[in-house]
Every structure is written in structure tokens, then in C-alpha cells.
Amino acid sequence: MPDDVADYVHKYSRERQLDLPGSWDDGSTQSVRRWVKEAAKAIAEDLDEPRWRSVSSHDLRRSWATYHLVERQMDIQTMMSIGGWSDYSAVEPYLAEPTEARIGEAMET
Image 1 (cartoon, one colour):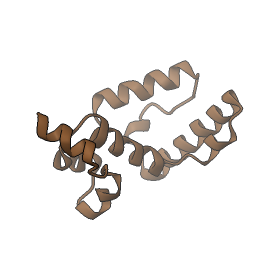
Image 2: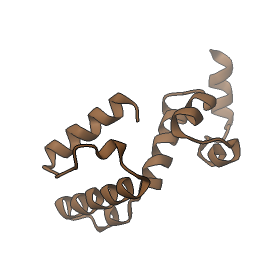
Image 3: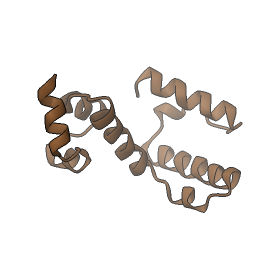
């Protein structure tokens, strides 16, 4: 996990007073999934928003990929390497559709 991501998660857990194990970021996939479910449940209760209960680690990974590809314009190979994807077809659904406006903007730069 990149250091800045770990820093954000630690900050979030401190702000929410979540009791995370000391080596949570070195944990198994199952541990990460459990932590995400616990955090989502806490957010749902804090905000009185039941939809947060259905948030999964997959949702977070997909949102992370979409943000970096679309908003930050990260090149796809770098994003795939950081995110652990080995197959382009797995990330293709996260790519923005090339609208006429996007094509025009791209050609201006």
C-alpha cells in the first residue's frame, strides 16, 4: 500500500476512534475486507445513511481506479501496477467514454 494511502487510513481511523490492529496494512485480504465492512457500518451509523452498509473493499478499489484514471489522468499501466491489475479488460469498465467534448479537450492540449 502506498505510504500516502496508509497515512489517510490511519488518520481516518484515529478521527473515528476505530480500533485497528497495529499491522492492519500488512493483513490478509480477509482482514482488509473485514475492516472495510466495520468502517462502512460505523459510517452508516454516524451519518444515518444505510447505503454505506453495502460498501465493500471492491467498491473502494473500483472508486480508487476511476478517480485516478478519470480525474487525475493517471496512465493506465501505472494505475494497473499500483492497483494490482494484470489484465486490461479488468480495468476497461472504469475508463471514461470518449465523448466529443473529451476528444476536443484532448486535441487542444
